[in-house]
Image 1: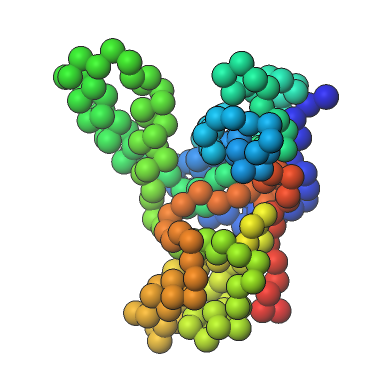
Image 2: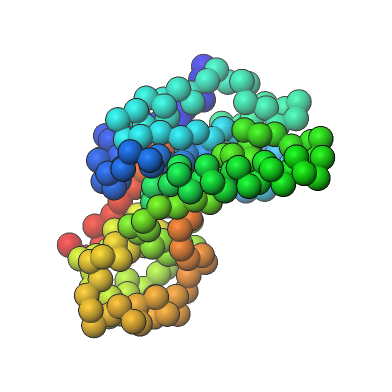
Length: 225
């Protein structure tokens, strides 16, 4: 028996096709978490534990995700096996800029050496710099933490053809392709959408469609037809 990460291969492939094309110095940042809120009776640790993280281009992304399907018990929280139902896979839908990350990483590692910090992990430090180093922000992500969101009100504050809606375990992510926002909405859409009830906003991690999110399979939904 193995951990099941890919729950809908076709949905995952469609998502990978949807992702923006990468420039030579860009990659996608992907991370696998164990979430206590998805298996509260089985986990005594903090809410979110990072199990794996990696970088990928679009061509290899499906295979790299498939490689996460290790035998049950291969993932640990201290001495305990990670419960399969606690796992959730996330990605930054905006590419990461490796040039920017390299510059920031050099500064970060130099600071650690300067202060003679004996406990740092160079790989972990550089991966964190990569996660924070976004390139062009193709999408602005609004995280809606409820299933009772009023999409009729959303259609009044932005042109809906610039939106991609993803249903998640607890609500929705509204992804705005900023280049396609009509001029009449550009100055006001951010504040107007935020006023409708948003948990988080910006360049954030997104549950991967076609992959597990605490026993749920997130995916795009056609709200506006």
